[in-house]
Image (cartoon, rainbow, N blue to C red; front, side, top):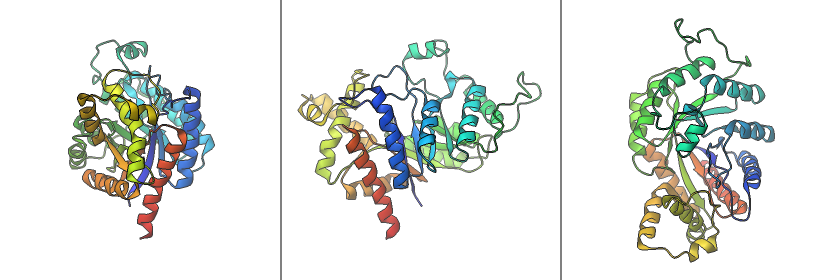
Length: 340
């Protein structure tokens, strides 16, 4: 049975601020739990004024306190910035608070411009791949889901605390075939960011399943695909609502970062050039836009093309009410499938 999850990047909406964006995330998580979504992930971005989620671990602590059974997780922690030991302890604390509900989604991207990497303690220009697999193995050892560090390792015998009974479920997040290869070798679940890269994900997912071997981060292959979704009462309404996301992505393409999500009227009145419209058409490959019938067909076709166990939807619209409405309609599609 196909599962549905939510990724929320805590977007700053027009007329609001970052504090309101974080409050909106909490309300969206509570709604997702009531609607029967399987998991709710939050992201990590830095120096991005248009996105309020810079510390997923802190936000997850708040989300866990406001929900009771939905899985909560990072989508994801940018491991190259951090000590694997500290990441393990953060997620052991979360598991102690919310046992059996925590997902540790791991990313390898910098999550910001070069100055962010420098400020986070990474040397500017340093190869972001260097040591990533070693960090994953070290993290697995500290979480007690992988083999302990070898006796010759300088940190052998070191234990991460608190000593809780449960462990987070590990996922590797990515938007390329390389991420799939690392996930298959490490035994983690693999979540492809279709909302970032609308091409090549299906081949990456097939390669992940083909090459999968049990490893330090897990024993069973799991595939999720995350996509932008705007689902309204009909196709025309959805197209109108999606104009805000179209313009937001276009501005990112032009290097205009840090702006709140534009309103529908602003987006519809924007003077688009031929190049702009071509970029919007290309960006639509990362989105599913439509009324319930079109959205249902597109979601299940996307899941089938990936061989995905789960679709994770990322809904960004003009305001909190329309985001909630889109999340609610998507949940209704799954309930309708189960009832037939």
